[in-house]
Picture (tube, rainbow, N blue to C red):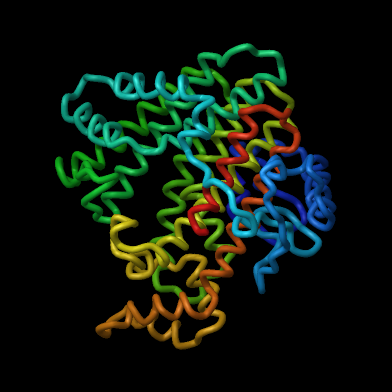
Length: 421
């Protein structure tokens, strides 16, 4: 879906147009592979998977089937016959997944990345350097570069590489720079004063400098990307920057629109979150030199993990406190951004539409809307959607050999779901 011709996606089709994952408008797509993959998803979704399918079986995790009422099974994942199996984190007592443990196998890679991040921004402009230090110094999970390293090492093993290439490491740095630039711009658009417990760039330096700092980091990352001299990865990552803008425009044009459909929400979520993660994981596999079937599956893994991650974030906007979120609960809804829990709730509660379309003009109407979303099943159905995408992400890892790196990728999926347990 990475082209102008793919922008009008038909989510009801039985093939995965998103597998284009970064191609230009005239790039070819292996349609036979796509059809084959869609059929395999259908077959896998309708039968029981044994211990080989899920590494989590060794942790005695139970599985169950969850039926999503009116959730289209074809959304961004092909056609499935009936609901896919999903992970149920509540069935068995288990230790929660720790990101520090997940990242331990690539800890040295992440340390090197942290040392390089500020230096590759460049020191030509002291203000830009200071802005970069502000946001890089605020920490963060480094989830995206960690995914690059995990996929890089998992796929490198398949072709006999003993260590990561320079291209692998540079890709991780580029991905984190692009993500950081998007955060700077997001904070401006959202008028956020704090991020990760620190003042945002625009709060310290003003909106003008923040916008320019984000632009500079996008440009700098593009320059480093071009120097990788891999046309497939250049197309793949360049499309992500366009997707960011498309997602923001799509969101801005649908505020307070109670007719927004789940397909539109998922497409916007792809643009804003999943596109970068999918490009990260596929790009890493490309630089390992593995077969295209593997690189496409790594793209699908990143896409499904990214969609699940965004749905979980949108659930937390309703279920966590303002202190936990670092912003007022229900802030997306207050701005008119209708996410999965709201879209599901609108199907059940007509009164919610009236409140939203009034743009919360009456005192207490926002609090009432939040309560309606919580009590009518919107949260539960969004949880089912997040789990369905998570299960697809697990399925996408089946062609990787067993290793600590594959386990890390699987545990990343679990970590995301545990946020809503």
